Length: 176
Image (tube, rainbow, N blue to C red; front, side, top):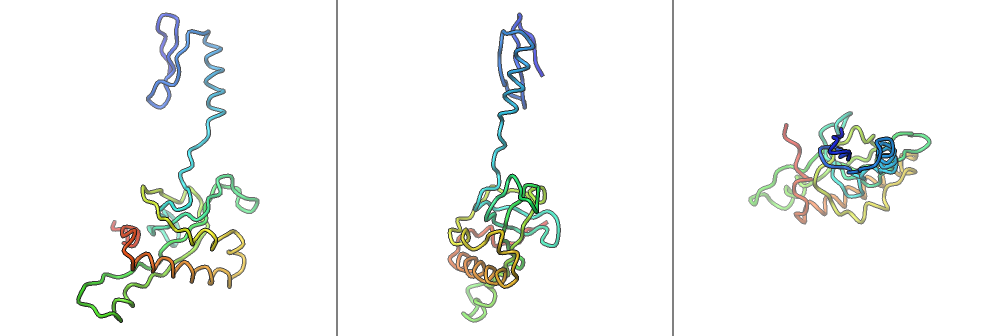
């Protein structure tokens, strides 16, 4: 959208003033087109970002982005992310419970998955999981034994974070 003010043009984009020019209209439109070509999308799914899965078996579950692939790959030519999430959340614990019961209720069942960006909903939260970055890669999904090993490592890391009391929101199931 643009307005003409005494021979000068004000260009509006997304509710804000995108540009102002007193040049001929053809020159201004070329400048705007060049600006849009050079515009790069903001990377929403950075490693450590918490998101919610919207489709599939784990719909409604919280996940942490381990690796983002904005351009896709040869097998998956769409933007996607490698994520680790919680399939079964830890149960509620109280002060009265014994150590054995507390340990049993604090267990987490993780899952790992490659998810299309369109099936993820980003949140404002992020989790610092330095140990997860080396655990998962694209080759992990090819061999079932590698998947199981990486799931065990992720389970250990998530349970440690839960018992230390960090990222409490991440370990509570969504209520909807």
